[in-house]
Length: 105
Image 1 (cartoon, rainbow, N blue to C red):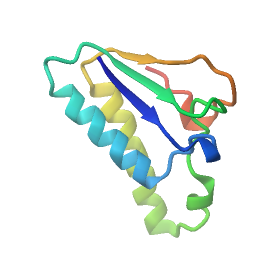
Image 2 (cartoon, one colour):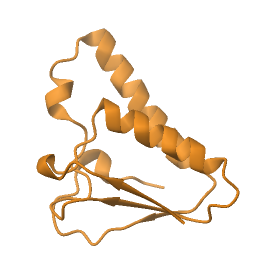
Image 3 (cartoon, helix red, strand yellow):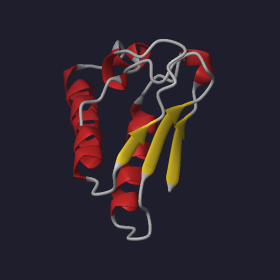
């Protein structure tokens, strides 16, 4: 079992570019590890599972950088979808769960 914890509790576990890259790489790496039987994804801090994409980052983007941001976010969704390891969301939701924090699998 591998546990991935999104830690950004001060900002409700908002997903920005750094988190997108780290999560994408983590799911790709996990998908290649035959010893991993399950992935647990949880948010830290007790305020929110995931608060969605980082709107503060998004307002600074121009058209070109926004396209890059959206492609990276889509790449994360694909990495999760293509990961052959079952994903368990640790959803003892005690706070908000918005936007990209509501994945369909």
